[in-house]
Image (cartoon, rainbow, N blue to C red; front, side, top):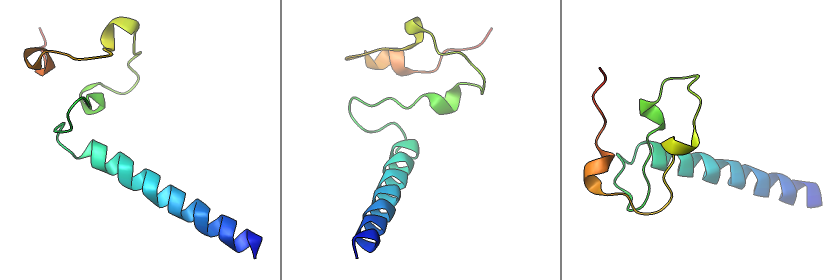
Length: 68
């Protein structure tokens, strides 16, 4: 019985995590305080400290920059 309960809790956790990730991924960056920029960064890019902001960022800074 304990194994069944643990399996059900695990499945619920996986579904909840997937739902949360998909919500953030497809929310169009409309959640206050959350900026999802991963879709604009090419695969294999190293994320460096100057690429990460913690705290409030001005709305004008959130627009994608133009590539040269």
